[in-house]
Length: 331
Ligand code: ATP
Ligand code: MG
Image (cartoon, rainbow, N blue to C red; front, top):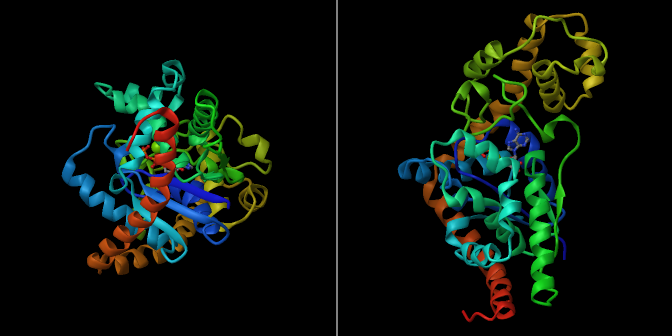
């Protein structure tokens, strides 16, 4: 049976980078595969946070995923910390993962430079991620491009475990990264940095909760260059902000970058930005109103997440038991 697993951190609000790069694919894949989607709160505590914010954001993330189209009747939507098998398997994986592999992960290096002090959890993040994925024997992991390196590490961990303990337990998964410009949406303030929930500037991203006015304002203030838009996509090379905004427009409207450029060639950002804001508003406004509906019934949300976590634990427990047996532990 082919299975899909993916996670998202409740470290802030769902933004269009998450949506275009990952969640849109989750919604598609839940129709074809047995799917597990996880709000990864154990991951979210690896960087500075306030416990009260974490509680609120976990619920907000669940609501955002439902509004974006995750259907609990098709997919198992659950909270990572409700299924402690994740950390139990991660501990075992820690003992077979070379330290050097963790130290060279780009994500770790990026996040470590932004923190005043770096905790061991941030370094071990990809080990926990390997446990998340491998507990469910997932064959495909829909993620944005920034996670590709972590999925490669997950494959290495799966193969090393099987070799070290002479078993055929873990399936090395494939990353599922959509084509086009959605796989890597960049910050609105710096075209060389990816859009992130934890970027200190909210102006760097468009969130699914943003009002129409705020979307307009963020796009108006988005960094650009003084050149008009070219006719040829190749001429966007060396213009990261222009390339990003055109890429977002293309993804949101479903048009190709070529087509978008044919229409706006020769025009400046004064003409392009309002069109981009309109396209984003058309995408986000309906999602935002669905979000309001899901917020109205917190008891139903709790019930849904509890039952998702129970379903997940039923799949995770036997995998963990087999891993314990292979390494000589008892549970
Ligand atoms: P954080 O800043 O806390 O790391 P994030 O925005 O990177 O937050 P994650 O929870 O780490 O979000 O990742 C959730 C999913 O969104 C992953 O599949 C990740 O690859 C994808 N993703 C994150 N940022 C982008 C982006 N800028 N473009 C495309 N996909 C993205
Ligand atoms: Mg991230």
